[in-house]
Amino acid sequence: MNVELIFDARATLGEGPAWDARTQTLYWVDILEKNIYADVELFAELDDLIGCLAPCENGHLILGTRASFTDFEPATAQQTVLYTLTESAHNRMNDGKCDPAGRFLAGTMAMNESEPSGNLYSFNGKQTEVLIPNVTISNGMAWSPDYKTFYYIDTPTREVKAFDYDLKTGKIANPRVVIQIPASFGWPDGMTSDMQGNLWIAMWGGAQITKWNPNTGVLLEKIPVPALNTSCCAFGGKNMNELFITSARHGMSEKEITSHPHSGGLFKVITKVEGMPTFEFTV
Image (cartoon, rainbow, N blue to C red; front, top):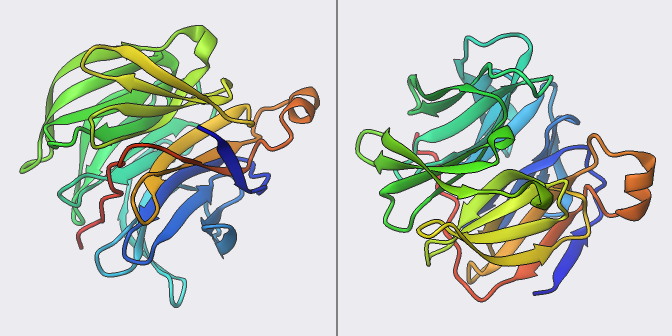
């Protein structure tokens, strides 16, 4: 599979791609620059860090800003805080996405990326619930095609954990490690899944996307990406077979940027599978 650079954004911390099927738009963020992008255009500049976003069924976006869940109306850029987290001032929101029932799951992390002070939250529009406490770098999330299994990554563990997922209540249970990432691959970051049940994981520091069978823990494929810090991936496109990949320049040396000049870019690869959708927030 050939990876195509579709936008040389040079993002500091490109992250969180989310495909809006209603408008056929890919939204993504540059966390540290406080920017939202729509496809290859700068869509909005915020006054707060933004870790993640998801489309809403009413046409708005839900944002995970530094310490709150916020409604964003695209037509007016009006922001309405829906819920504020009680978090350390040294924490910020990181990766997040909606579950198939419309809840918004998002995790926090310490700014220094080393303290297990973060949490994975589930937000139903009115209140939050901590699903996983004591997280260091809350990252990739995905569901199985039958919605009965939830997959999650706390990056420093180099593990993908699976949980039984109760779609009716949003509860998780029975945690187990299904994939162990070798150190030579890089750090597991953002993640998505396809309709065959396989997981696609962006490898921070590894310049690649890896594809895994979570039922066996077997590596199925490596997809080289010309960006050292590949950060996240999501399926989209008319046929849901296009894998969009974000990347970042954060933490790279001048030498590394010289050898990977397209780091921070937005990439696309045409796959042979249909990906799982980006689920909408139900308001």
